[in-house]
Length: 64
Image 1: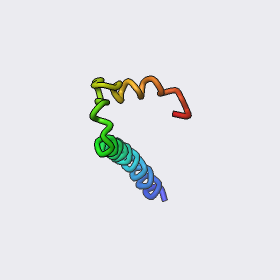
Image 2 (image 1 turned 120 degrees about the horizontal axis):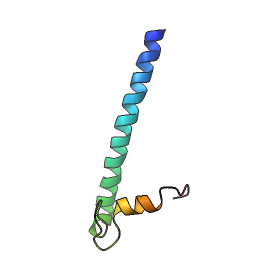
Image 3 (image 1 turned 30 degrees about the horizontal axis):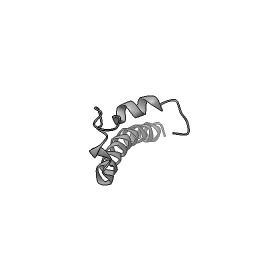
Image 4 (image 1 turned 30 degrees about the vertical axis):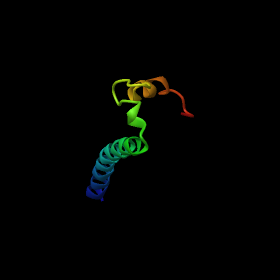
């Protein structure tokens, strides 16, 4: 039983790491597909603010 719990915890940890990476990749792919990156850079402003600046502004807003 103890081995099963350890394996389940390891699997959960791995899924959380890879799930986060996948979410970031799919979000960037959506922004690219939608044309958002023409005006918004990931780390630097182009015509609009950078995504990192937008994230910083709304980091504590639960509705954002």
